Structures are given as C-alpha cells and as structure tokens.
Image 1 (cartoon, rainbow, N blue to C red):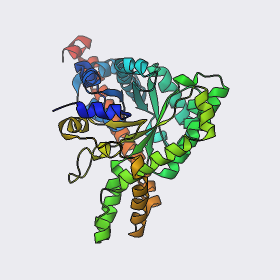
Image 2 (cartoon, rainbow, N blue to C red):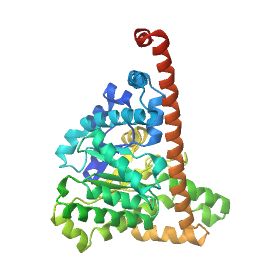
Image 3 (tube, rainbow, N blue to C red):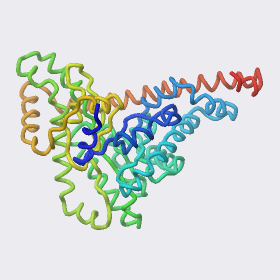
Image 4 (spheres, rainbow, N blue to C red):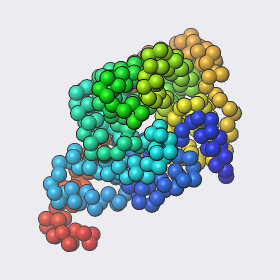
Length: 383
C-alpha cells in the first residue's frame, strides 16, 4: 500500500476531503491521523452520516443524558450534539485552513433538510449554525433547491461561508454560480472581507449513474447497455466546463481583484454503487485543478491500495462528455427528468435520515431522563 496516489491527486489540484464525521472518530483521533497521513484537508457531513454516527456509538450518551436532565427540546438537543462534533472537527482542521489561506480546512454542517423549500427559514438556521459553531473554517450546507438559491446568496452576502449541496443538473449548477456571484458582490458592497468567505458547489456523482443505469437497463438495447456507467462522469465534466466559463467572465475578474476566492466544484457521492465498476472511478476520472473530492474512508483506502492517476481527466474530455449526453438522449434518456427526480429523492432521503435521527435522540433522551428521575443521577451515571 502506498499513499503516493493521494499525493499525486493533491499535487494535481484536487483537495481530498473526508465524507464522514463522528464523535468516535474525533475521540480516537482518526480524523487527525487522516489529516496527518493521508492528505485529508476537509470534512463533509450530512444527516445520514450523523444518523449513523449517533445511533451506533455510546460516545454520545453522556451529552444526551445531560440534555435530558436539562429538559432540552429534541431539536435543539440534536443541534447541540452535531455542532459539538463539527466545532471539534473545525479545530482539528484549523491548521489546514491557516496553511491554505482559508481555502481548505473546512468542515460542513447542513441546515435542517425539512426546510429545503423555505428560503427565510433556511437563512435563519444558517445564521444560527454559523453562530453556534463559531469557527471561521465552517461551511453551512444549503441544498440547491429553487428556494435555496436566494438563501445561498443572502448568507454569502452576510459573510457566511456556504457549501451548496445536492446539485445534479447543469442548469441548476449555473444558477448556483450566479447566486454565488450575487452574494459575493453584495458582501463586497457591505464591506465584508472577501478573502475570508468560502464556498464550494457539491455536484453529486454516483446517484446520477444509479438513476440513469436503471433506465438504460429498462430500455435494454445494445446502445443503451453501452452507456452504462458513463452519465455521471460526463455530467460532472460538463459542470467543470461551465465552471470555467462562468469564472472566466469579467464579472468574476472584478470580484477576484477585490480578494474573492472562486466557488470550487466539489465532487460528492463518489463511492461507486455498482460493484461492476472500479471503486476509484469517480475520483480518477474527475481529476482537474481547483476541485474538491469528498469521499468516504473506504474510497480513500481504495485509492491507496490500487488507485493510479492518469493525469488530468476532465478538460481533455469535454467533447466526449457532450457526446455521451447526446447518445443518452438518442436512446431515450430524459436528462431533465433524471435530474429532477434525483433532486427530489436527495431531499427526501436526507429528510428521512433527519427524522430517524430526531426519533432516536428523542427515545434516548426520554430513556435517560427516566433513569435519572427514578434512580437518581448517581445511579444513571453508573449505567
């Protein structure tokens, strides 16, 4: 095993972020180990990650017990738990933040996915999370719904750094970039230090193939079968083409001159879902400068074990990417319908995880509160 692939990836301009965070990882020091040994310079979280972390580890019991003793509302309790982890993660990543002049070393936390279609509530929660974590290297994750776009612009205008999540379509990605530019222009007008405001645009990868491949399998023709596993990478490559176009404009040049940093494309959902595919393809086929690839530790380990870079794999492939989308349309794949379904499903999946997480914490708080009331604090602590 060798970490040379990770070094080459970093040298190629791809920031390696970990798509995972848990109290157990923080207590054991494994996040710090990955930062030190495996070129990890950022962390992303989502409701599903927290749901798994909190329900599968006893490291949260003491905090949950204290929340129960205090009679804290379950929603506020959930935020107390998750912001504690994210704040700790920000502290672990702070040296990376300082060394990169604020580009990397970021940790993301998401607004409640149940309000993804409510602009004002999203802005209010983003402000609250920014205040609760109180770390300059925080990212507030806001879904790229229609209602999320003005929230993204407003948060950036207030100096809040944003990770725009759940992007699937090229059209929506263009709107996300426009929201970013609008927000940064307003931040400049308000006198904010643009050098401290960061943003990434999280373009989801593997879910595109999962949806498109299922449709190709139903079509069943040889032409359809030949396109399996090609849609997601083509879609992301064209997103980077759009990124180059938008950030090559005079509008961006003026903001860059004022100290603004570009909103980097971030490749999310980069673990392969089909076992027939190489487990490193969503990393090695999306190598381009100025990007972020956030991956679970299993994908990180796969890169160390058998990953081999082939140089830059995005810009030289623009023509091929356009051809793939054209061929998909020819065999009957409705791109607009695919991305609309994926956005709706993405919100729904995070809402489900969030509701399950709230239910789990509520049950645990009730159980621990009962122990405290019936057996006394000392007895509960000994359990």
